[in-house]
Every structure is written in structure tokens, then in C-alpha cells.
Image (tube, rainbow, N blue to C red):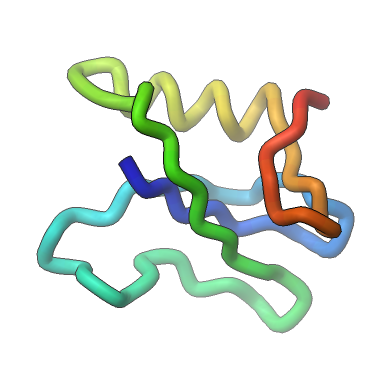
Length: 73
């Protein structure tokens, strides 16, 4: 599953979402001028606990701004 993540210049995650199919090629998060969006693939995110998984990503990870990947805080 594709996860769209907004982060600041230090890699701190501000928001995470999984767009519905009708959002194809559009980002549902509008970053401010000093924020960036990365898209990561997380095939393990499925099912009823999706919202909880997204919260865990936000709370437990940050984005490595050099590689654009998730790293544990």
C-alpha cells in the first residue's frame, strides 16, 4: 500500500495518509512551503487497523531526508 507522508525539513512526520483509488496521481495532503511529501510502499499496512498503523508511523518514525525512507526515532 502506498503511504503519502508529509514531513518538515528535519524529517519529522506531520501527516500520513493512504489515498483512495479516486485520488490517483493526486496527493491529499497539502504541504506548506517548508514541508515535503514522500511516498513509501508499505505492503504490511492493510485491514481494519490501518488508522492505528498510520498513527504508529507518525509517532515512532521520521523520514531520512537524504534517502526519503522511514527510520525509527
